[in-house]
Length: 54
Image (cartoon, rainbow, N blue to C red; front, side):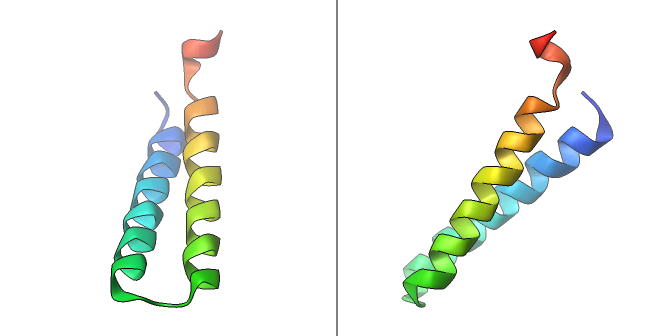
């Protein structure tokens, strides 16, 4: 597990928590969707950078 993959996974989880928090507060759906998409991309990039796929 490299440092960049850990960073991407951390950022993805952080953004997912932000999207959940914003949804609970009732903020606009566009902001929530943007955070959720960014979170999914960061998590996917972090998982794909793991060395278990080789």
